[in-house]
Length: 326
Image 1 (spheres, one colour):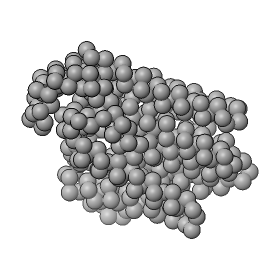
Image 2 (image 1 turned 180 degrees about the horizontal axis):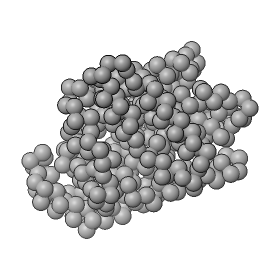
Image 3 (image 1 turned 45 degrees about the vertical axis):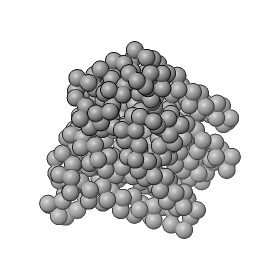
Image 4 (image 1 turned 120 degrees about the vertical axis):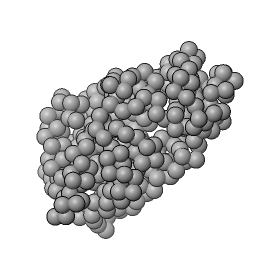
């Protein structure tokens, strides 16, 4: 879980505390519910959003910071992320996430829906505890709304061969990049950085998030289930057409129509044929270049910040996200 943060020991230590804090907020005396909550709290990924939050908090004035507040806000970001993943797994009927059996697969869809909702309540509790009455409450509400609209827009676009790269980017700005934006914004804001730095941090976060999602979609076409610890090409099977496919379709739509016209009835063999076409027509290469463009935008904004060890770490992490294998 914390492998990506091994080069940032200060952040890694705080993330361990955040994990413990999440465990505390997802516990109950009810034995029938406790196992579910334990599974929710123990399922951990890269912790990117709270990690970025702490990195950007280090740009500010440490003497003015409230450590307990920072830890709780970081926990709120990860809990919100967890809630969206639980609901994603329900919609996609995903059996695995990070190699572990999903909540919906283990407990059933009905229970998983309420589990995701329960995570939202834990998120709200932490917001009330840390920023009640502050303008940042509005930012969180707006971010959550944008996130949900992004998910709904993606669902509406399922199996749509006419969607464009521009449509795709708008969707991921909501469903993925918005939470990255919020994490970097809040890190700078609650880290007591200047308003200018805080605004730049938000832009950096959005571009990191867009690049991250594009590359996540690329891995679906270039990696394996063993490495990703989830089914590959699952999005394609579900009718979610991501950047490698969209770039390839734009070049030769007639080559894909016989397969994609089958929608949910497409076979495993036909999905592999589509994947081969994507590679042949340069869809993966085009998507990599596209992701690199957003990474460059993030790096350009990082260069606008005061240059020190912290900004060097932010730049290093931003670059490394394009070289990951999972």
